[in-house]
Each structure stands twice: as structure tokens, then as C-alpha cells.
Length: 385
Image (cartoon, rainbow, N blue to C red; front, side, top):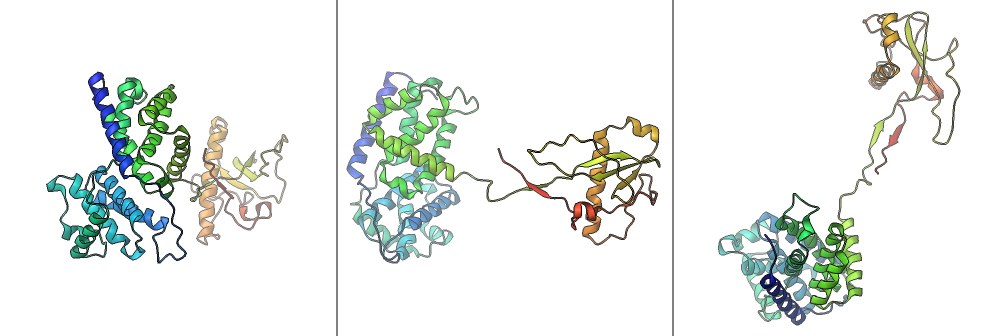
């Protein structure tokens, strides 16, 4: 799909002018209502929660994003006109949702009212929803056709592609429809943010487009200035809206900080060789990140704690790399800790590779290493870059 040619530019300019004129007639400055009692008025948290609920209903009944955008617009207009109690919020929201579905969707996609009331778990009967519909229509003067933020998002995106055809060159696997669908998801998340009610829908849509265009082309600022002039908006308000939108979108992204992940990190050991052809090692002190220890590993004296593994043959041990030795010892150390976890301390600890018990001179007593009682190695948190 290409947006080029003077006719297409004139058509987009006309759509933008009509949408801005329609928004100027409908939109009112949002004044936060401070309620001394939560049972008297609807709080911002309750408003955001019910919009999240409507978003789930949109996915459940497979409706268009335009339906949800119009439902949120009708809900905010109605709550700005009347003082509703929280116990009526679900009925108001599902009524606005049903009105938006009948306005946007095709006839075969409009859910049956009885099914909507039952599957949505709104707690309202079909008769109560019909009565609330009548109240909403009376307060809104039976005028449901308004320019939603999603309408402005589509217009701004089309204008950006018509003036900058190279906009999606950095995204070769994404066509314009997929790109605007990605921006639509961001907009629907922003609709459930009470702080963004202070901005017009056109300003909110332009803020989302500007944040996305900034990532794609170097001359994004010139394009946003052109859109600002066409929409006749204030640049200072756009900057403020961009900041709040960026904070909200970053806060809704999944974070790994609440769930810390730990991995097994074995202690460092010094490798020594005994006269019986066995590989022995004993734990060495792990230096800190700032300490430097250039000392050579010392051979453990009699009575020191060691772990013994018999080599299959002395000649084969010469060709074995140090990395292979450490891997085998770490695996044996790991299973040795599991045996202690299941109270199998009496089992033979020094086991040869061929199934025979190693020499008694090479005994194992890792539980006493470094004065520590536990045989489990210390756990270290994973740092996320």
C-alpha cells in the first residue's frame, strides 16, 4: 500500500481537518474530581481497571480495535457529564461497549445482548443494559460519532508514509498495515492511563507516532513539525505528552527485576596429583573482584580435605586438558552434594571411574571446607544487562 500523489495528500489533509473540527466540538478539558469518599465517585484506578476489562472483552468477542477506542471515548464523555457511583461502573462500561459495537461492527459481528451480558460477567441483566443505554444516549445527545485517538493515529501514520516513503526501510519484514497495528496496541494501552486524559486524542496519537518515527528516520523532527502545523497543536504540550506516554509504555513492559534467578556456581579448586595415580583437588579461597592472588597452588599436607578420582591410566591423564578435569570434578561435586541432600552421607564418597572404591588415603569431607557446615556452594544472582 502506497501513499503518494497530490490527490492522496489532499484527501488525508481533508480527513485531518474534519477530525480536528469534530474533536474541537466534543472534547472538554479534563478536570480531576477529588472525592472525599470512594463510594461517592469513581476513582482513577477504577476507571483504568474497567478499561482493561473492556480490552479483554474486545479480544473475547473478536471485535475491532476501533470498537474499543469508541467505547472508551463514550465512557469518558459520560463520566465527565454525570457523577456516577462505582457500583454502576460495570453497567455503564458494558453499555458503552455495546453501543460502540453497534456503531462500528458489521451486523453479523455484533454480539447478542443476552450472550454479552452472560459471558462478560458484568453482573447486569439485558434489561439493565438497555436502560443504561438510554441514559447514556440522553446525556450524550444521541451523538456517538466522534473522532477517537485511533482515528488520528491512522491519519498521522498515513501522512507520515506519504511524505516519507522511506519510513519503513529499516523494517524490511513489516508492511504499513503491520506497523500501524503495532502502534494501535500501544495506543490501546495508553487509553487505560488516567493521567493521559488531560490531552486530546489527536495529541496522544501524535505523541505515539513521534516516539516511533524517532526510532526509524534521522529527520523525524522535521516530519513531526509538519504534522504539528497541520494539526495546529502546541509543541510544549506534545513534549509533555511524549514524556508521559514513554513512561507509561516502559512501565507496562515486562520486567525481570521481581523474579531473581540464581545459578549454580562451583567453588574454585586447586589441582594436585597424588602418587597413586589419582586426581585430587581441594577448595581454594575465592578472591574478590578487587583482590589479586598470584600465589601458586600449594600441595595439601596430611590431614587436609581432598577429593580423589582415580585416572583410568597415567598416560591418558597426560593428554587430558585442564578444562576436562575441572568439568569432571564439578559434576562429581554436584552429585556428591545431592547425596548429602538425601541423607546418603554413609555411601562411599571416593568412587573410581571404573566402579571401584579409591584408596582410603584419598577421603572426601567437603562439608568441612573453609569452616562451612553446608555442602551447597554459594548462589550468585544473575545480572541482567
